[in-house]
Amino acid sequence: MSAKVTPIPDGFHTLTPHLIVRGAAEAIDFYKKAFGAEEVMRSTMPGSKTIMHASLRIGDSVIMLNDEFPNYGALSPVALNGSPVTIHLYVADVDAVFNRAVAAGATARMPVQDMFWGDRYGKLTDPFGHHWSVATRKEIVSPAELEKRAAKAFGEMK
Image (cartoon, rainbow, N blue to C red; front, side, top):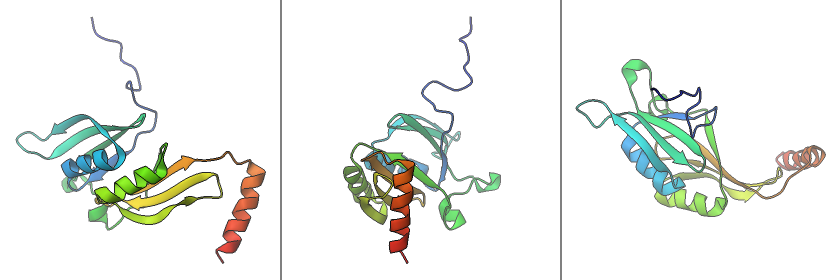
């Protein structure tokens, strides 16, 4: 008797980031140190250490990753000279996670600060070229208050 197959695997959400990384094994170690990731599984190319698929759990979410495979168009931000994507991570203590990530090798791009939308928020780039924003929700802001605060914040940026 075979097990019932569900369309979304247990433990996954409907949307799951999948990162292409130059140095996937090192990236797994970094994500463990920086974000408390737990390795769920790792599959390597036969006869090598090249990671063709790995899954990590960060909080209640899964993130998948693999090494670059240029022949198949799987290129990392290093190969592409940057990334337009930011992975957003909500945590209980943004300051602690941000500082731990920097200590593990991430580059701070925007220091942690209280933001007009109600989050304490900062931005990082990991050693593999992926952008991360890290935040802790501090208050719930109504749409009207958000609009007012945004106008003030962007007015101050001029």
